[in-house]
Length: 133
Image 1: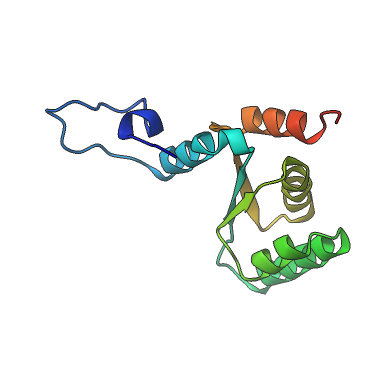
Image 2: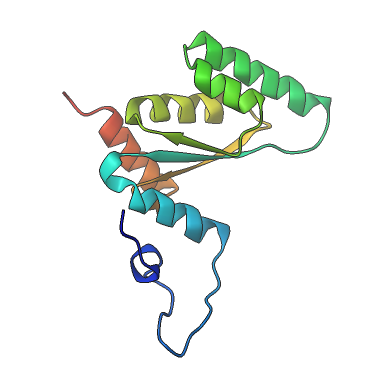
């Protein structure tokens, strides 16, 4: 991959006079997912709140559900509280995203796909996950 500041972050000012630019977390993850677009890599950003035993029960329940659906690698990474999950398979990414979002009230997840975030990323991933072979 041949990346430059201009291609990774096109919305930022890149001139010889500007020696620094500010980025936020979302800028970086969107750029990563855009750079991996041709490989159909989905990025799930996991949010694990630090609250109480209820959160851990929710985490354990989610891990059990993921194992039950055959998503063993995903379940193991979530049990370890991995913050970013990179999927090379849109079908598995779609399935994991929906299981996480629907089966846990305490654990949050944000989807980044093809340089998109939110509903646009969900639509693009849904389309790729369900396209006819």
